[in-house]
Image 1 (tube, rainbow, N blue to C red):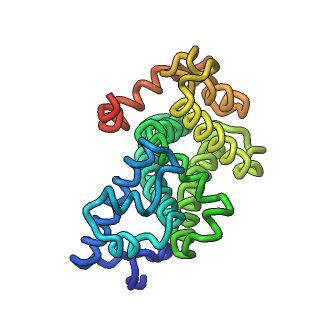
Image 2 (cartoon, rainbow, N blue to C red):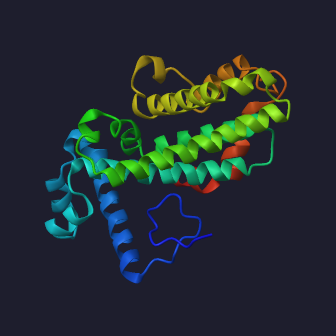
Image 3 (cartoon, rainbow, N blue to C red):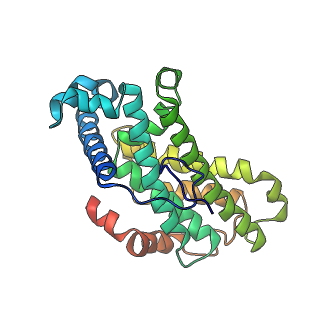
Length: 255
């Protein structure tokens, strides 16, 4: 294996150690992203501007622009931060003791945690796909985002393949892995986003918020005939176990 000269190259197998200066730059960027998230939490997407970020942080305008050439780069960086957070949670979910379907639910739980912990910033994953962002964001930022998307997609693809091999899903689903992966993402991301951001709407307000996402996922997974079916295993107990055993620190941070 060849040692990499850059830590930004997603094809690197052996990452070189960061220099002290590079570590300082990384820490400063994370600090700026935290400030940006706070601005968005109070003022929404439209309220986040480069000028407001400069005014709210402890760094000069030049320093801020050295990190982000424009607001579009800033949105990409926020999305990248969120994707890295989700990937770290997904990897923990896959190590959970349980069936492939229970691990799938743990991945869904991870998406819900991200939406709850970073309500506004979690939408950056979709915002960076709009032409307005893609036309102005740097190619490097976009490339990193796409590599992270590929990483999380492959993790889910692998779980689906393992479910088929274990007999938890029918073999004919082997040709539908891409479609199953999309169905899981759209249901988990979409439901989590709506539950986190639209709690005052009638359709959401009347729900049992603790089980709404689990209900949606059981409907989908039963439809896919992903075993064990929801009438064969107590997935409410699984859902509680995921929160206590896999994501205890994150759940505690929300309480």
